Length: 328
Ligand code: NDP
Image (cartoon, rainbow, N blue to C red):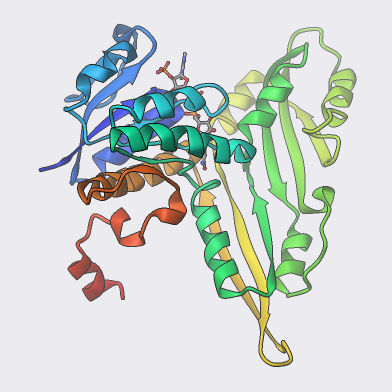
């Protein structure tokens, strides 16, 4: 029998999960839940239902796992504990500083309901976190580095869009190649924020807006741009549509460490992602962890988990026997 999947929230991740489930023959998408009018949503799947989020609890026995695709800022802090009352759930909560509180809130509900909830799944947090953990466990004497990009930062793009006179904007975060090379060479550099990443902005102006004033506002914006070398390009709406409509991202997790009696041997662990579509890739990770949540729940586990608590074989559609025969 297929794993019965529901999607809560139909934005970038929701659409990505719909595609990812279709690539996993052991899963079946049963329903997409939305807070909007279900009649206004046009989903790709021909078999799944579109249902109002207000009816979710009625589906308690119809789904094996619910994948939460809301935003981290305001949706997930409420939705994940709420839906862990009825379902095994997965979310991609990425407000790093709030993860311990989110974990505690979700754990309380998932323990009460006897369900499994896996939070902060994706690539960062998610696969990058796992790689940082593996590398630190293996090379206890060493230094971690994470570089992001080249990719679109939605938060930074939104920050530019909020400036008066800006019609549209896309911001790319770009790792500084010389810094990456210094890490790869085992130099263990101390890198400032400015030395690790640059920021490149593409901006469409409202009619009559002053480009010099807007460039100044962007490059001096505290927290977002002031600590970086930032370049700003003004482009037309057509150029934005033609060259900047995708959401690529990726990055590098590196650990540079030493072993030996004299610490004479250097080792470098590097994990890289180059993603054409950040949301579609994140959704593919969510779907693999949905399988894990279902299996862990079948084994009688409950409570909140993170990627650290999930044994790797739970993610794979292959059996343990197949994995041992083909991948060990
Ligand atoms: P979106 O803004 O596209 O969607 C969030 C929610 O907004 C949806 O679930 C949907 O809920 C609602 N929504 C979407 N489109 C519309 C619309 N046109 N009108 C009204 N409401 C809409 O966010 P993303 O899917 O891009 O990202 C979700 C979260 O994923 C992010 O906040 C980010 O924190 C996280 N993320 C995590 C990553 C990781 O590596 N851990 C990587 C990438 C993202 P509804 O259908 O109920 O209206």
